[in-house]
Amino acid sequence: MSQLKTAMAILIEVFHSYSGKEGDKYKLNKSELKNLLETELEIDGGERREIKDMMRDLDADGDGEVDFQEYVTMVAAMTMVFNEFFQKY
Image 1 (cartoon, helix red, strand yellow):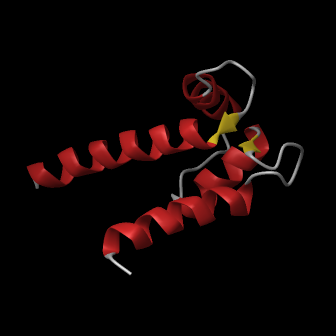
Image 2 (spheres, helix red, strand yellow):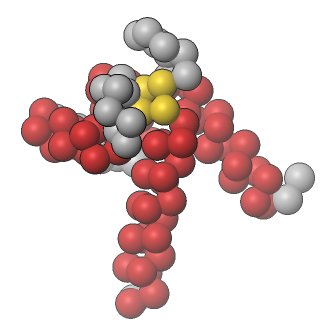
């Protein structure tokens, strides 16, 4: 399998390993998003305000949860930020 296919499979696998533990199995609620960010990206989700703000920003359709498309948008945006950061150094 190519590196890109592997990366895509991992993105899908990570999303579904956190989604649906509490409710809709195809969406991340605030708690599931917090667990994903803390575990996978080592982002401290202890600040409720930060998680709430991130959830609001990601939740494009306003349903109070993050679906797969919104999750992929988040990963792509974070990847672009990291790319710019590492290009400077």
